[in-house]
Structures are given as structure tokens and as C-alpha cells.
Image (cartoon, rainbow, N blue to C red; front, side, top):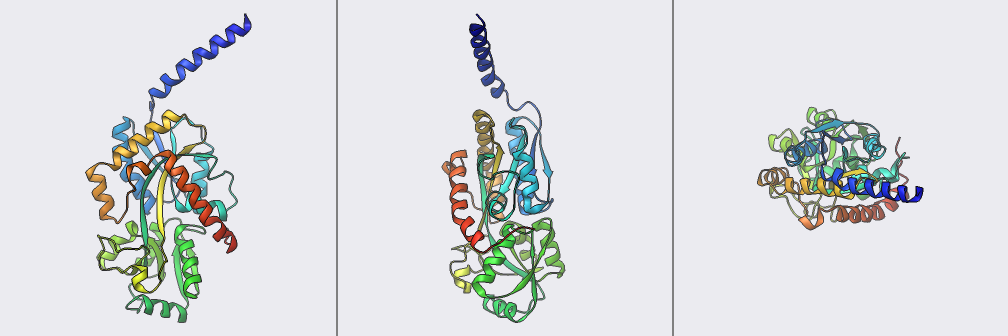
Length: 321
């Protein structure tokens, strides 16, 4: 009799679970951005949260949790309840690079559930307006003969790793200056307090257009349609130096599959709207095709990126503070 009661109780709970998931969401959702406000990831999170909020019928709150190159914010999501209400907005540095550089209290691959691939952006190699170099080759020569400094969003961030790879490729030596976000780093570049930065196109493009900083190359195989005058690294003289910062959404491990599917659907619908697509294009951000925006596609891509970058970073003995 007791066994029959247990079976009946289990069946009742199982029948209720899909109904609960079908009602998701029933309260506000928090998007945890692991950097200070004002940077490219923060801007992306705010842009996509607006149409997603309408689709989901609940407010989406942006919470900036900065520190340790994004690992504090990501860790908060990894340890959150797997109920679909705490979402990690991350990128190449927070969900790949940090796993090889920092000692983390979570596993970037196994403690988070991928939701959706968001747009990516190549980087610009930019300098303060006072740098005398007229082109990329002159910039490298100037860096090789001067004590320059480079602004980053922290040890292990995309801005930092790109600078380290650039050092190895050009034999130029410079000091790194860490900030709490790429937005804060860019502010000091504009002010002339630092010399150089490897920055996402979406972050630095407005300043390039305004003439407050200089752009020497874009780290992609082709020029950006929104910045056709900026040469590729191949054209500038550093062939093959391709760096693209891709972005995504994750939930805590153990989140119900239909909750993940609901968030994925809202993200994909948001990215398909003409208004958001125009905004991405204007900022030089690339969207992957819809079939690559799925949770499974993001999981496979993240794993491939880990397999690619972790050996490089570990061989270079790059470690966080």
C-alpha cells in the first residue's frame, strides 16, 4: 500500500511539473552582466532585454556584478537556483578564457546550461589621438620603441588576451592597465591616460566616428560595412590575427529544458526584429544564422572554443590575479 502511495504521489508531481514550467515566467528575471555598466556586454544585454521582456511578459532586470574579469558575476549565476530567473549574460572571455586563467568556484562548461548564442563582434586596434603613427606598421614601430600602456577590462578579459597575443605576434612590449569594464577602459583611452586598446567594435565605433581615438585595423578577415575605411589585420600587416568576441546567455545547471527553450525562443525572436538587427549592424556586430542560436549549438561552440584556447593560454602561463 505504501509503495502504491509513493508511486501515486510521484505521478502527481510529475504531472504538475510541466504545467509549472508552461507558466514560466511568473515574476521578473535578472540578467547578470559580469562587468560594470557601460561596456559592450552591458549594452548588448540592455538592448536584447527590452524585446525579450515584452515576449516573456515579465520585466528583465539588468544587474552588473563586476570583478575578477567577470568570474564573480558568472559564479553568482552558476550557484543560483535553477529556476530560470537568474541568467548569465557572458562572452568569450567569461565563459571560455576565465576557465583557463582563473581558479574558479564553478565549471564554465558543466555548471551552466547554454540558452542562446548572441551576436559577436571583432575587435578594433585603437589608440589615443595623440599617438603619432599614421598607419598600423608605424604603430607597431612606435610601440616597439616606446614605453606604452594598454587598457584592458581585467586580467584574462578579451581585451587583455588580445593584447598578449599581439605582443607575441609583434614583439612589442607594453604594460597593461586593468579596469572594471571595457567601457571604463575606453573612457581613459579617449582622455589620453592610456595609449592603446584592443576593443570590441560595438564599444569603440562611436568614438572612432567622433574622431576622439584612432583605429588602425579590425581583427577580422573582411572590413566592416559600418567602418569601410578601417583595414583588416591582413591588409594592415598582421595576417591571420583574427579575434571575435562572441556572446551568449546561460542558466544554472539543472534548469528545466522547457524553461531553457522558452528563454531561447524569446531571445531568437528578439534578434529577428528589424529594429534590433539594424542596431547590431550599426555597431558592427554579426549575428549567427538561426540554426546556430540554439542551446545545443552554443554548447558545441563553447566546447570547441575551450578546446582551442585553453592549451594556448596554459602554454603561455597566463594566470589571473
